[in-house]
Length: 331
Image (cartoon, rainbow, N blue to C red):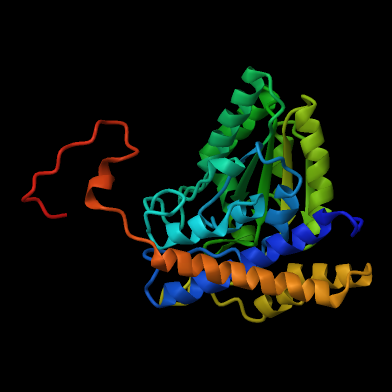
């Protein structure tokens, strides 16, 4: 257990609570139609994201997935611009153009999330190559799911990272399903860490519901990467509580009692109990939860009060000069 005199211990709880409250609110307003498009929530996987990101420096890089809100929050991103982005507002972290599945926050090293399964792996390898060529000691953390390990981009990125000994940590968040396909039906190996053997890459499997256990494994991987030892493959065994995408109007998968069984090992409940056992006062934990709840409520109000982008802004942040919009054209 981390020494509670170190604020790192309570920061892990705070970040996990931020993710849980953010996702609860996002799911509720998505059901009301305030968030356009699909919404993929991270509730249940908080220890995986926070346990890995808490080890990183602010200038280290991170690449996420379509289940995209939890990763930047775990890395320390501010909630206001994240919530505004979900609502498509101009104050969003990507000016309302990325939406739920395409968040990025360079201020905390988040290079972006993507809806294309497995596509973040070569991006992470590229970031790692950049760090190596520049001679700095930045590392890159790459998140992906168990389903992504069957993609060609995954194997290409892993191979290059291994051959060139790039400072990249590949984190496979194995939540048991690729949309509605069980891992056992889509992957021929028993453990995702077996994938790393083909690239002679150090690997570790860890309980993804235990934030301290994840942090310990990640700390070793980061130390190896910073010292020039090359990449590491980490498999966190975790679980998403919601469907692949929420509020889709139909049940994609009948998981029976499985969700309730996993909730008995809820990552936040486990860590809260550990903090109490270690001597942290209950009122301290309650105050943190109240503060986080208020922070998420503030982010939602900020997003709602923000303006949508103008039609002229459609031509900003692209690789061509802005085109003039004739006065008679209505978009």
